[in-house]
Amino acid sequence: MTTSETTETQRDLHADLALCSEVAEHSPHHWFVMHDTDVMSEDPPGSCELDSLAWASAPIVAEFIAEARTGWPIALERAIKAEEIAEMWCSETATQVQQYLDAIEELERLRAGIAVAMTYSGGIIVEMLRKLLTEVLRDGSTQENGE
Image (cartoon, rainbow, N blue to C red):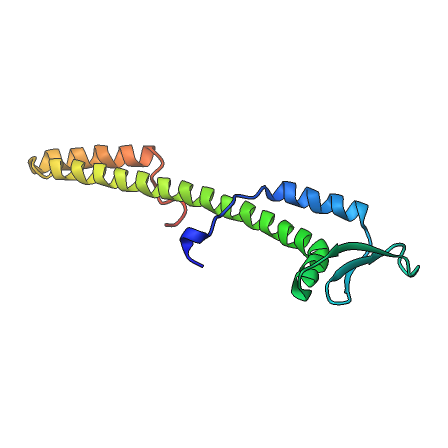
């Protein structure tokens, strides 16, 4: 199958999970395959009263339908949790990237200040560096965290 033949639809996982829950409420009993392609449910369990839920075109399709009733809710819950974790990591990463960019900007500002200070005579350099270091320490750029 080529990419031009595939289409991807953004699913609403919460709505899909709600649909699975609704199906489970209306058909709470185990689904199983009978005669290769019939999807059945025994209601109530042990009664030998069978409900025909679906007829499938192939045994594998029937197995998929029967397993989907219990498998899809689990898969959807896991997917929802994975999306939440991914969103959290993206948010944390964006914050860390911004902090890094801010630190690079501050470093460039300090380098520029030192470069300017290097053009002055010795006494002026010491005074400007003292002022610059005082400013850096006052702004909280100390090594308080042992970094």
